[in-house]
Amino acid sequence: MEHGPRDRKESSRIDVRVLPDSVARLWETMLRLDPNWDLSKWLDERALDELELVEGHLGRERLRLEQRLHRIETLVKRLKRQREVAGEAVITDPNQRNLFDVYENNQANLEKEDTSIDSLPEGDAMVDFGSLGFDDDPLIAIVSEH
Image (cartoon, rainbow, N blue to C red):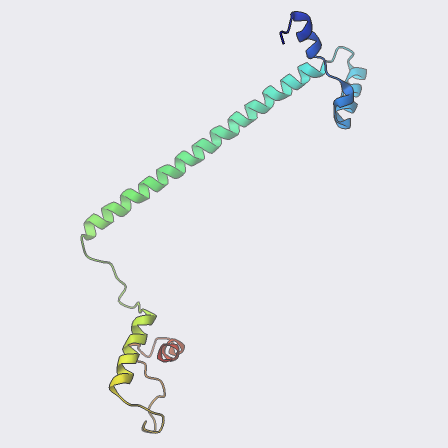
């Protein structure tokens, strides 16, 4: 379907009946204020304004993502340098305990000794702290025994 100059002019006309009520009210109000007001021109201006806003938003988003990427790359480089400096040595916390290691140690101790409640001398603790020190949580020791 070819559009001649006359068809283009007619296609730019907007039928008020197909528009939402709010747009139709705006159109009527603006025509009362300015009889030369054109909805098509107004929509074109609003669309251009909206595109500028979107472009600005996308620019800010791009900048934010570039900054985040830079921070991530910097972290990767720093971690790589730390790993190279540390070599093969693993950084461990001497105070850190693994619950399963404690459990395995307690199981080994239980297999070595037959300790029942009756065989314990009075004054000894009911809970074998194993490799846990007295400053560690006794609840973990109890859970690791059972």
